[in-house]
Length: 258
Image 1 (cartoon, one colour):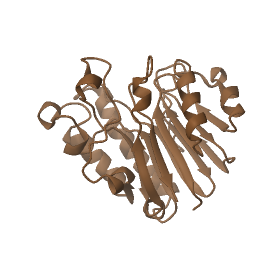
Image 2 (cartoon, helix red, strand yellow):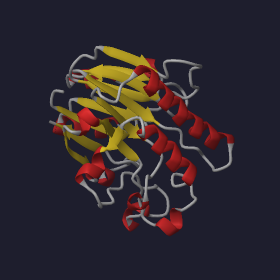
Image 3 (cartoon, one colour):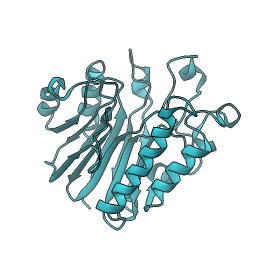
Image 4 (cartoon, helix red, strand yellow):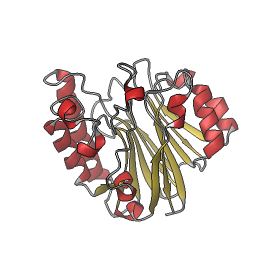
């Protein structure tokens, strides 16, 4: 596995946050950039500014409020948009690339909307569908990175208040079981390798002064198979862009593999 600097960031509309993203990429120069919630059809995606920074641009979006894009300095040897089997999702959330020998999944996991709804059931089924894809098409002994907005805070370290969040969307037993089943494929949390106890929130609601109150959640993750996990040397959420004018509600997360 070659050295790799990977950025994952839910930008909450790539066109609304284009200056933010371009500024960040020019400063940090990651090798791979995984953007979520791009909110733009593929034909309208602003490719040229990213190409001018030296990136190959792979997009999978639509009119609805989802969409993913993966930017790579090296040309991908494989690109798969969406799940490999079954019906295409209405909202596009999965973009697979293979770059420099590393398999990379860029994910925007369904939110779930509200517990007990069809949307929440869809979220649980979505995780099972992803795990089935890994079982059929990938191996845990190959370099594999799965990153993006998971819309789940894994445990007590990942929420501002266990009392406030227990049983709430993003922090339910069902969601925790769904995530655990996915990780049982052979994936480990790269952030926790370097920050065993830090909170490392990556999302602050626009409402309720959550940023000022530091009431956040860690829902943007970088998971890796054993070969890639062994090469992980840092994973850092960056709070600076959250202070910029009209920011995304998510922080960028920069992961480095030696």
